Image: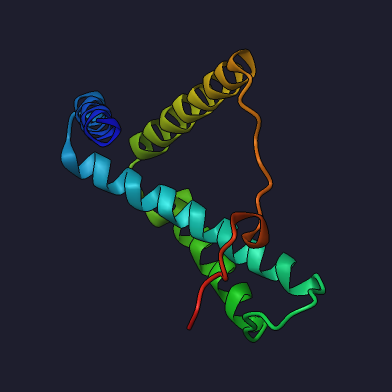
Length: 131
């Protein structure tokens, strides 16, 4: 039952976004813009996580790759690439809606007593990913 309700709500939200934007090319351009922002942040996170020491072996990459990824994604997300300014407005509105929904989720969770968990693999009883 939960799956069907989730799919219905997600589909309804997707249609609302398409109706809000109006044109599919504007939505596609906005999606590409937001993905460039996300990949910029991910590459910065890779650089930050490289500095932290961990007690086990983890993924490593040469430093120049995330630096190059950060610079190139940030460059292509900039207004100097000739991107339609409406895409930045749509992206800002969508991010604002996301922040409002996050705030509502936090308030509902606090009101109902739901607490965030910091579960690790040992607490879940699993062995973790196996390769």
